[in-house]
Amino acid sequence: MRTYQSYVGGQEVPGEDWVYVLDADTLLDDVFGSLTLKRKLEQGRTAPDDLPATVVGRVAKADRATVRRAVEAAAVAAPVWGAVPPDVRIDTVGRLLHARLAAHAEDIAAVLVEEGHPLALAQWQVSGMLECFGPESIGFYRSQMLQEFRRGERRIQVRRQPDGVVCLNPPQNAPLSSALLGVTALMGGNALVVRAPRSAPLGVMYVMQEFVVPVLEEVGAPPGTLNVVCGDPAPMLNCWLEHPAVDDIIYFGSSENGLKFEERCISAGKKPILELAGNDVVTVWKDADVELAAEALTESFYGSGQLCMIPNQVLVHPEVADALVESLIRQIGHIRPGHPWEPDVLLTPVLRNEKFFACLQDARDKGAEVVCGGHAMQLDETRDPNGIFLEPTVVVVRGVEGARELEAVRHETFFPLLPMVIAEPAPDAELLETFIGFVNSNHYGLRNSLWAKDAWVVDTFVARVRTGGLLKVNDSHIGFLPYLPTHGGTGLTGGVFGEANYPILRTSHLQGVSISTGSRPRDAVFGAWQTLINERH
Image (cartoon, helix red, strand yellow):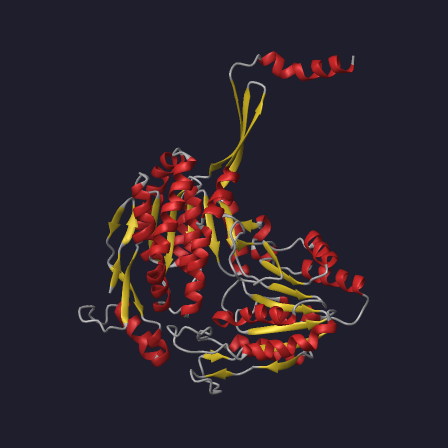
């Protein structure tokens, strides 16, 4: 059994209470029994001396004093770490961390599976982590942090300076990969405090303490550069808001809660960096490769739709709508429930499904047609109202006008329900205007995709779609790529400051620098005007 204490100021800090992690596979066998055991252990009603094999780990729960101590340790470390040269903070840390993550990729994936991620999606997450710290991405980060120019005897720099103390609150559905985003804030020169969520703390603690900490120690980072604590979100967020040493807070959560938290951050003088809901649009033009587009759309059902960056709605040209529906339904057939360790399983349990059925009924009431799915099911795919899995479900919406009246189109659903909006026939130029207007009117803005071959369509779409932190053309919607961001967006996805989220950039600020060998100040003030007059005469 893996056991982790809080990690604060370079030391392990014991806690009196524990959060226990049960192998997610046991949840499928006995939901009630598994949750009851976890509750009894954490309430001290069951002795932890003789634990069953289903308990795979435990993490100390930090008390308020430990949470404050983590912030204070970060505040001491931040100026020291921020003064370390960028080639150490970015290049060396990135290279060492990439090597260690790659060497232990299978072990990391195994821990994610224990926490409930299907193996295929665990491997996808690990590959994304490696891409984030790959040489191309590291080179991009480095190029953005410092640019230098020569003008006469001066060296002119445009550089980014670290904000200071950054606190990160990752989501329950993908805490490890989200926590590792914070490491790029470390590379920017900040000190970091990470909350490991109580629902899935093991992966965060495992990677942070066994891979990131040793890398920081190897490069001589001061104690307190990284601090990791597990606890409830509300009291920890309150502590961060109240503590004067905190500069930035990276917050993952719902749009409703996130926008309220944004206001609290600004009132408290903190920089809010929000990762909220997504409601991604995939647009399919009439010349698209329908088979590949449908393959990308099946990503909507990965993790039972409980991922923020998957396709949430489809806008399709009427000339290929029937072919796209047919291909999508056929390809959905390989998406099935199962144990998380099975290599081809992509669906995960949905313990609360009442919102799914309410959203589905809303779509039916407003004229949408259910073309596949729509039921709960058991592990063996038998339909059962009490099943903890949901069938991948596609609903067809006829016409763009009024489509946003459907809850499934207007808001992120976070379950396996994909609405396909089929546009009314119209001239192509008019339809493209409609499509671009529809995408830009989305209140969310995480990712968007386009499937089209016509260069005019692609160029127009790319030039005029303003929403979203990422736009992909003829590609997987969720696949990771070097240089490009994995998170971030506009509107209800990122708040009023929302954009593509590179934490190394979002947790730093621009500064201009001029280094002269000894310029004459009067010439610097008035010389440019005199040169202009001389050139004119």
